[in-house]
Image (cartoon, rainbow, N blue to C red):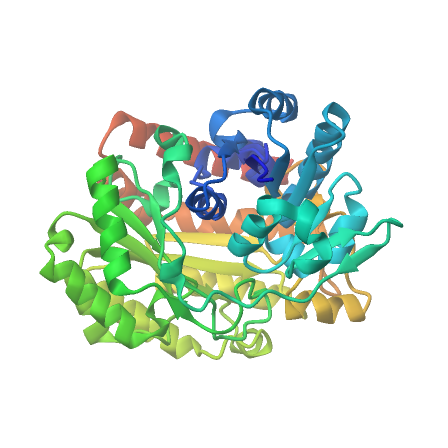
Length: 483
C-alpha cells in the first residue's frame, strides 16, 4: 500500500534562530527541500501535505494536532543542527499521539550524523542521509513489502532495536528529472526574504538551479557532494516563467552554492534571460566566490538582471583564509569588489569571527577589512563547526568541541540568552566573541556614510521603521556590553 505523507518544517522560530533582538531581520523562506520531496511524491500519485510551522506560526502542539487532522501514516521532518531540540520534542509528541505512525528525518544534520541522530532521537524510526527525493518515494510506496533493508540512503532500527545503516543512494545526475517543487502546498503569501536580499517590497521567491560544490572550504559540509550538477537552462527559464505567471513576481533569488562556478552555465543562463525578455522584468540576487567572476562576466550578469551578489569573504587574515582552505587571496577579494561596484551590482559580504587559532588582532583585521571593502550589507557570524564539516572533524579529534548540545550550534549565539558557543579558540572567551560580533555590526553600520546611504534608500514607512529598529538594537547592544 501507499502511505499518505505529511512533510514538516518544524516550529523553529526566528527568535530561536537569531535571538529576541535580531529576529526582526530574519527571513521566513519557502522550505524548498520539502517542496521538492512533495513534488516527487505527487508525481507517483502519493497523497502529501506540507506543514510549514514557522510560516504558519505554529507551535509543537499545533503541528501534532494538524497531523491528527490530516490522518497521515508517514511523517517526514526536516532537521537542521540548531533545530535539533525542537525536532526531538516534536517527534516525541507525535509518537505519543499516534504510536503507529512512521517518522523519517532528513536534512544536513542527518546526512552528517545519520546513526547518531537515530540514537539521540529515539522517537524517530528512519533517518535519511543524502538526497531524499527518491528515498522518500521508496519509503512511502510500500516499506512493508520491500523492507527497510532494501532502501539505500537510510538508517533504521531492526527487529532487535539495533541501528542499521544501508548503503548510500547515488546523487541525482540529471536534476531535470526532479519535478518542480510543489509550491502549491505552501502558504506562499507568508514568506519574506531578509531586507538585505530584496530589491523592493514585492515577494521574492528562491529558485534552486544547481547542487554540489567543488571547493574545499573546511567549514562546509558538502551535503550535496563535491560534483557540481546544474539544471538545464531551459528548465530554469521554464520555472521562472511559471513563477512570473503564477505569483506575479518581480524579483528572484537564484540559489546555488556557487552560481558562477561553471562559466558555461552562467553565460548561457544570462543570455537566455536577456533573449527571453525576463531580464527586463525580473531583478535577481545570487551567491558567488570572488575567484569565479571577472569584469566581463559581472557586466553580463548585470545586463541579465542581477542587482546583488553575496560573497563569502570570511576573514581579513590571509593566514586564516589559507587555514580554512578558501583558496583565495585578500587581493582577489578587493579586485572583485571593485569590478562588482563598477558594473553597478551591490554586494552582501559574509564574515566569520572566532575561526580556529584566530587571535583578537585577526578578528579586528576581519572587521576592518569589511569596512575597507564597504559592501552594502555585511554579516558577521560566530564560527560554528557544524557536523559533517572538516572543521568539526578536526576539532572533534582534538577534543576542542565545548558542547554537543546541538541547540547551541547557532552562528548568532551572541544575540541569544544562555548561549553556549560550541568552539572557542585557545586564549579566547565566549564573552569576547559575543562582544566582537556586536562590535563588528556597530562599527560597520554606524558609520555616517552608511547611515546616509540607508536613509537615502528608504522607500516606505516600513523601510524606515526597520532601519530605526536596527539602530536601536545596535545602540542597545553597546549599552548592554558597557553595563
